[in-house]
Length: 213
Image (tube, rainbow, N blue to C red; front, top):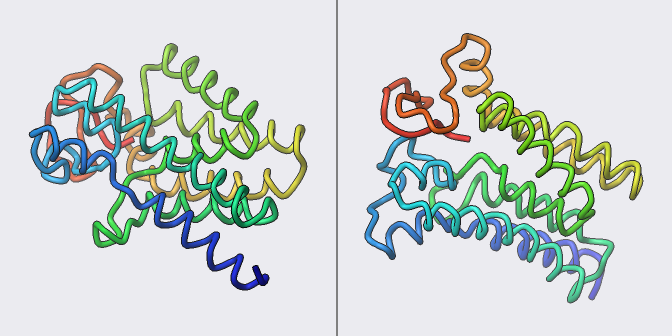
């Protein structure tokens, strides 16, 4: 495969796999309604949990994570290991801006973790551990993701060098941007905590469940 063909193939594989909206598909298939009309309207596992279907939320989390992992592994196997960073990056953006949903997707935490798992798994373990620790202490899902995303690229840099670390830090910057409404609520003390029944989505309407994260 020629260089430009490998680039196009890797980008398409990553983006199309990342674009699979597991939350929307699962909630529709199991009769929980259109996820985009529920709670915050986000397509991720946090909003699926607001339907009261914990199993669907867990399945969404797993699906959103593994599509990032699979994208990297498929490209590594069939295109070449030189293009795995591109595949991971486009899978991440596929989740954020899926073509099937008019480019309105999720915030990328699970897919970020899945991509990291495929690229440098110890960094993914570090991400998960720090997320759990921060969530246990603060009970803020969004804050846990933001903190964990700062540390995992450092682990990647120590273990695998600069290219992977730069890619993950770029994804971290985008992740923080996608959470800008959560950051504003954290700063003014209105961000909902994990398990709270009175949390506020980004649109400002108070609902039961948790905000986008």
